[in-house]
Image 1 (cartoon, rainbow, N blue to C red):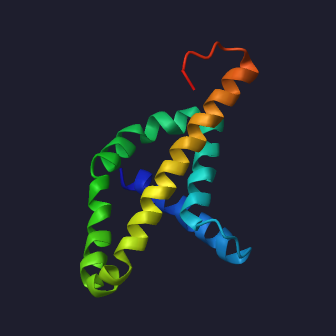
Image 2: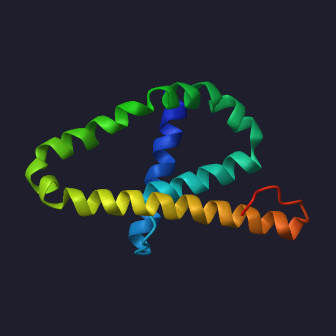
Image 3: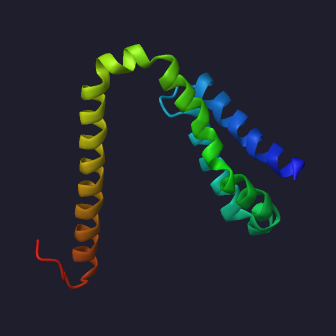
Amino acid sequence: MILHFGLFLGFQLVGETIARIFALRLPGPVIGMILLAVLLLTRPKIGTAIEKTATGFLSHLSLLYVPAGVGIVQYLDQVSEIGLPLAVALVGSTVLAIAAGALTFKYVNRLLGVADETPL
């Protein structure tokens, strides 16, 4: 299990290193996750080996929200100043992301010739 967790952290470190060396706008952990996904696609045996550790890690993923909550409480005065614009931006971007996903889905269905059953 420690070896598997080290593998996850190692890929995050490699991704962070690549992001900083090449001054990429993509976060290092995302690069590391992409590299890990490529490894898992090319070596499925590794995926089955780390499955139990990954499942356990995902079951405790909510713990990662604790630092974000502490940060909000720590900077509550600043959040209260920009709270409304922040909420509007969050809701607006969520609605736009859902709409973009739905429209992309409809477009791909049209390209594939799947019958459209929605009224829009």
